[in-house]
Length: 203
Image 1: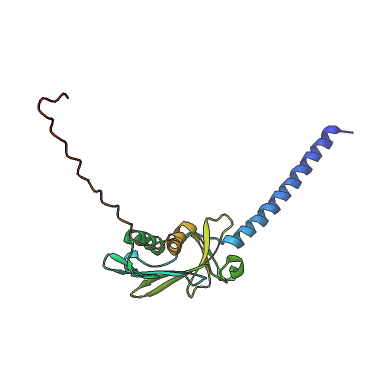
Image 2: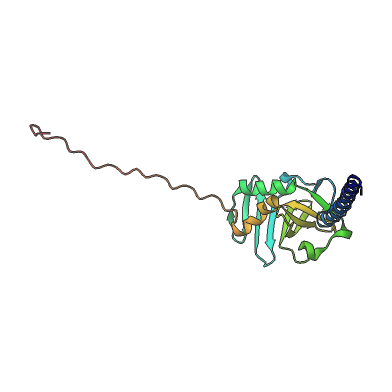
């Protein structure tokens, strides 16, 4: 028996088996990833400038909502209570949402609303402008928790949007954008009067 020939044949067979295995596994994994996350380059969600947004509303599936409106450069809280808002914080959230880009677009034919949590949305985010509202429905998160599945009104496609961007708005439900509490003013108390030494007294 030619052991060298036998060994070579075994090695070739092993390489072929490994090649077939990795090709099939990688292909199946690629198919699964495409189905879950879609494909394509980042895509802008809204053709919108942050300066044009005059209202932001965030609501969850329990009915809890926070709403702010803008007049000039200042934001005002209108729900769940009324009063001044933390304008820099609201501006930051609006800028992120208005100019955001989704990392993936999932075509309508591949959208599984139940799997993506879009059949029972966790949140609805509305950006109001003089030209109309832009609404974003937020479903579940991707397995790595880095993105949320979202849909736009009148658009059957789904998108992957950074969880960081989404939470800039949804965190307002648990922490309403109230103005920072000013630090209390320091009060300087007058010191006790110092008695003048008595002449001739021993120090």
